[in-house]
Length: 347
Ligand code: ADP
Image (cartoon, rainbow, N blue to C red; front, side):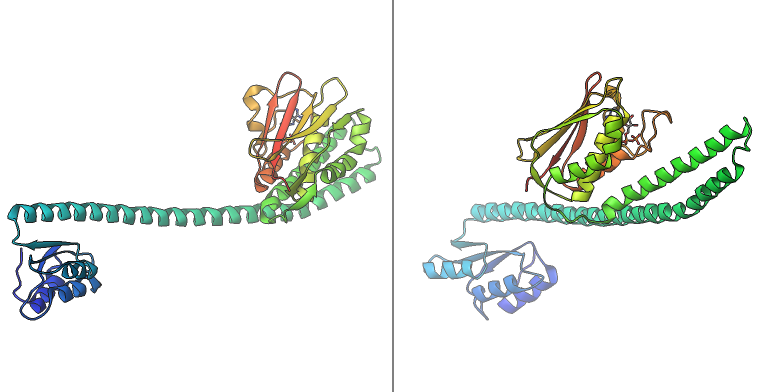
């Protein structure tokens, strides 16, 4: 505990000691206690100090309000009951401890927030670097591969049936491998471009990207006698070319993974509880085992060998596109039926 006999001495002591609480008499020999209180409360380093102002009972109510308005935390009238004074000081000390604990917690929270922010930024940068790397690598890989395929084709035409029984399958395997690698690189490039090119989302009638996909797939649809039934589709917020890719991948898969029956594809839509459109594409193909319903959306995840061509990127790309549109995509399957559902925001 420290004591000062005048206002100036009190101010000097307060800035030197920085106490938790100051008991301040209104009547001081050199200045008014209210002014001392104001100076404590307006000081940068002293504003948080609790000030309890004490004065004679004879003073008027305006003086009490002036004290409180000057920043005093409470006002006690003389003669002061020692028990009341001690209890008041204790109550304010408890308040001070609680304030300090809150300030510490706030400080820790703000530090954690800064750390989280920095980690987020680093993650975003590393993601962008990775996407950039995938885009550049796949783009640059295409060039030498194109040269390989062209020269294989030249070799094939030069051979004009000169390959013998043993050489022919070896050559076919090399050619097949090169073509598969070319498709894989094309799909990886496609995948990495979806997020680097921020799509221009606009209001589009979903029938438009669907028709684009159906046109691209018309040959395969006809050759396997597929039927596609579509109930009226809504207008949504989206990127037409990306949503076209989603339809093309999903319908293409329904053709690729068909059962003995000709593919029968049904496309329907309805609103979910959140007011988003749910687009459902159901097929009568080979179905997907329950354990793989989530796995099929991972890049390069395939449930089939090379007997059915594919790179394992199609569904990963669909998920990336739909997530980029603020939606979700999932699959359910029962027996020989798969239903892919995705959500999109209404226009
Ligand atoms: P890809 O078709 O190139 O293998 P996808 O990412 O499009 O790659 O699909 C991943 C896997 O999910 C496929 O290999 C296949 O096993 C399974 N799949 C996708 N669509 C269907 C479907 N409609 N019916 C049954 N299986 C499917």
